[in-house]
Length: 507
Image: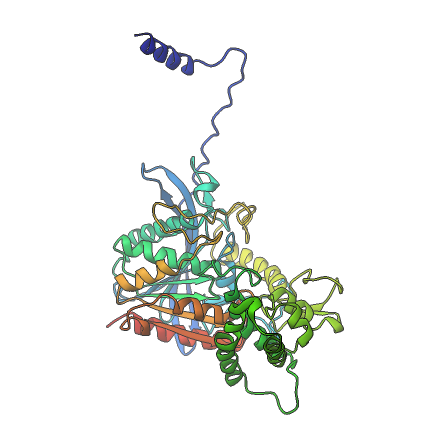
């Protein structure tokens, strides 16, 4: 009886504010922004076709299990007029980060408009906007989506950043967005495609599996600059990382004419074929041998890597045969006070710290492109699409990346034992459970951020049934991480994706 009285008293006391103690008020729910979209009509000549299309800029509200709003996700949809929706493909596109808005794909790749770059991949801010001859609008409607906390996408109601800033939290939000968008626009019977770039490829693998679990069949997934398997980690931690990066480092050395020896420079594709064979063969065996490798064999391999990268054999031996990409960017042209770009190894810049171990900055096009893309996109949204938003568009959501949780719920997904997750099992399950699903992996040969051979190696480890393996195909382009910023590569990638979408859409 005393225990019952004590429990009852404790309950009463817990409900009464302590005397003299200020009570912190619960935070007010963040209001949901207006969901009224801005719809505009347009005509564009793309290729040899005059296209009439609608552009719809607005937010889609997603909700929790109790029906309360949690996020208002911003998107711009491009919808071809006067075509049967049931047979018209629809493609959802996003960038990565994590914490990046989708301004890069939107302004640089496959929308009906883009910001043009010159042949060297540079641009003078604020740039300009032109009709995009490489748009995918002739073959598919397009929806460019910003992640919560980026662009104009807002976290609303009583939701918290932690509800979205994580691998599976983020994928759940995008899955909800797609399902809500399909219902609102009557597009459940359209062939469906996902295009993700960089971290957006990890999101795509998660989302396609979730959609499949929800009964939403997807026809195709496009992976641009893939980051799927975080268990490879840094090259100093795992021999697989050293193997993954060597062909990309060799490609950059080839581009800058750093290969030693007499005679003309070899053709790139046969050269990279040989580098792949070396990387997965003698090089892999040596790395996994570790300290047991004979000194003479180690020296011979260092000389071979010298021939592929131009780095000094003595330096390669000191690095234990494993060349960190940051070291490669720094060491390759150290004597000339030059560093190479990580996102695109074709680019080089003045070295501001000649004696440092790593580059102090990435001399790629991203900073210059960012200025022009941001200026043009803000003007385009307001002046052309008539989406009049007082808030600032956030190309990178503040604090999103640093707050990101890489931990996946142990009850739902197996742990990889790595601080970064492996999303290949998700993609593999989607392929197995949906035999009609196709995957296209697009890779930049000069990408030192997400190396193309690492993607080839990782995808080969899904161990798909023989009948499904041909559903995964690859494209390789003489560009960097953002493949579409190199003019020739963008044109070829657009052609390849148009064929992919056509073939994967079914009869």
